[in-house]
Length: 231
Image (tube, rainbow, N blue to C red; front, side, top):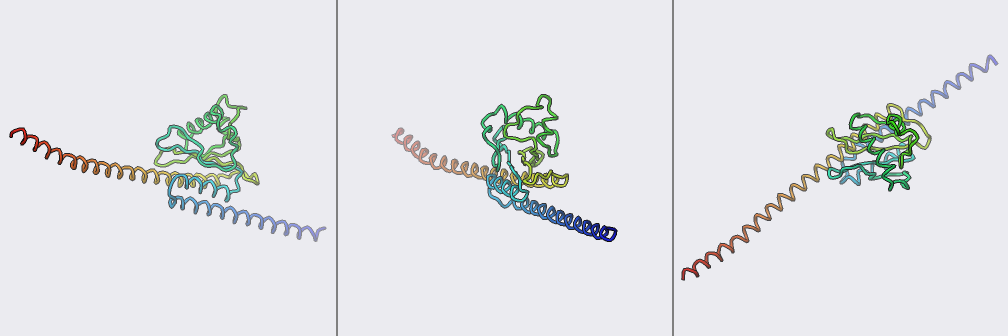
């Protein structure tokens, strides 16, 4: 037994080191993938494509059970689920269970910048203990999407398939992805506003040209009318 024990300890030590090394490599790998995905969001054409890419990439890389993007455009007063994978939407048409949670998330993110779980959000809201959360689950993690200080929306991510909890580093990476997502959305908004301004300028130029073209014949008609009247 005395001869076997050091061998067993060595094997256990080597096995622990191997497992730890594999976990570190895998963790570093998925974080690098997320950073690459976030950087590539700026190359996408519009918000719909950005949302689809974000949701599908997060689900594939993190092996999430569910993930969704809630967003409101510059013309909308409320947040809506724009893209999702894995959400149970049977209660999505019941505003009395969905909208209150969205409002709580909005209020929280208008005061604080960090991510929060739905469970933590419920515990911090008097009167919510035991109440239904609609399409949300208490294990969901919500991460704000911001740009220029404005709250554009939030990512909602469920548990991973292996039920691993999110570490502080994981959450920091998610917040970085959400920040890049917000910048990409804001860039598309500014492009749309610029295009709209160009269209308005072009329309104004066209209107001025039409007014000039219409005014010239009218001047001629008035001149001839005055001449005829004098004769």
